[in-house]
Image (cartoon, rainbow, N blue to C red; front, side, top):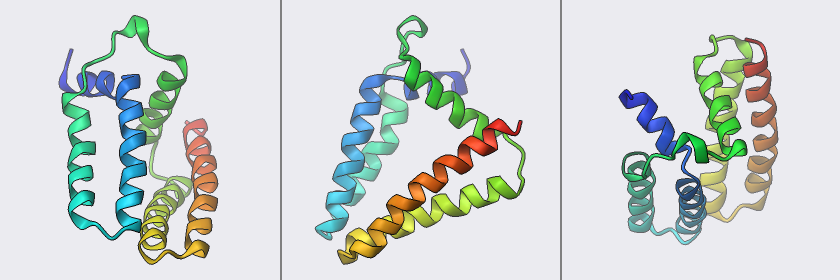
Length: 131
């Protein structure tokens, strides 16, 4: 199994998925509380999740996790076109809106971030279905 396949099998681990979810919630909390030290620690923890999480056995993969990871891979492999550019811009905008909204406690930016999540989902699905 090559390095990419090992990373993908680690990414499919349901425990890693739960830890990422908890980490993302804690990142939001650290932004809200303006705690840079906690934010940096959580970012390092999130990155290390890719390398230290045990690989999941292909027989015990969850179908929903497998489908999401396959969609991610399809999106990465999809050709650059207008829809993919919009999905990249929307994703970056989502992180900026969420980060600034949490940092400044701005509810309008947070609502815009959650709306952009829905837009991003549709753009990603459209990008992966055009292959």
